[in-house]
Length: 205
Image 1 (cartoon, rainbow, N blue to C red):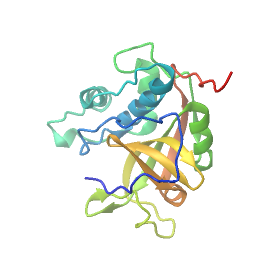
Image 2: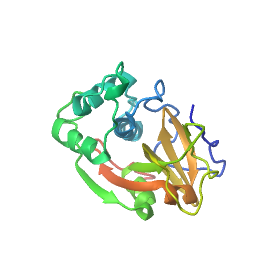
Image 3: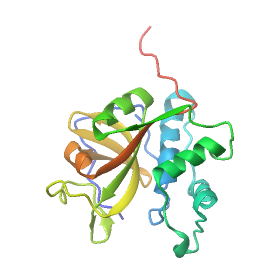
């Protein structure tokens, strides 16, 4: 169980509006989050560009992790996680979820100041964090924010929405809210990615 704050009532918007389920809803104990991060971006894009929404199963996430890192769910010693850039290179070279044509059209490394723009332009942002833990669990609240000091544990989350002072993220099968202070404290790297199915929704006539 991960310590997460409730969704911000101020109303964070995004192309993930209406989505309530994300990758790794069944499994929050393995280091497969970097693969789930891409899967969550795929869910956001299919939500608005190619319905019905496509949520990847834990098994699909784990099979891609195995292809890149040798991860075996029954062997904890094989669970080493993966760097975001490693997963991005795998996606570029091999496609996604068994489809060799499903490759990113473009990607650009971003700073914490560019996350909102990336979400607005591409629908999502693929981000890595150094998080603290409370009683062995990741903390997404501001309780542990102290003097801008990062945590010790790496975690990937998909940023799916933004509003002044807040960001909405997808992690472990759920959407949650973090503050701008939290984001600036624990953000370590991020990418804006042009998904092959992405086309910006047209509003109005």
